[in-house]
Amino acid sequence: MKSVSFTEFRKNASELFSKVEQGETLVVLRHGRPIAEVSPVKSSHTPAWKQAALRLTTRGAGLSEAILGERFDEDLF
Image (cartoon, rainbow, N blue to C red):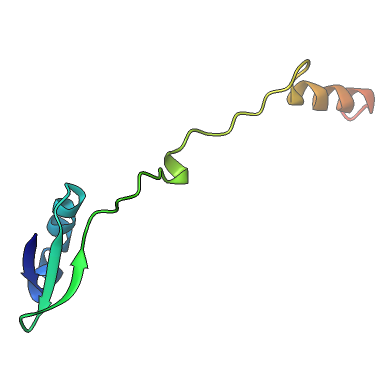
């Protein structure tokens, strides 16, 4: 566990967050007293934007084919 001053944390936040991503825990000090602990997230939850997309499937004709068929039947072309 590494201790850093608030000023150092503010100046080098990007670099320090990279160390947190690698598993290190930081204690932020203000006037020599600990005010915060920055640690890696312990959850193995994958964010929604990184998860595989939902795939919708149907039997028979595809949705676009069905829509085009209805448009053709209704003479919308």
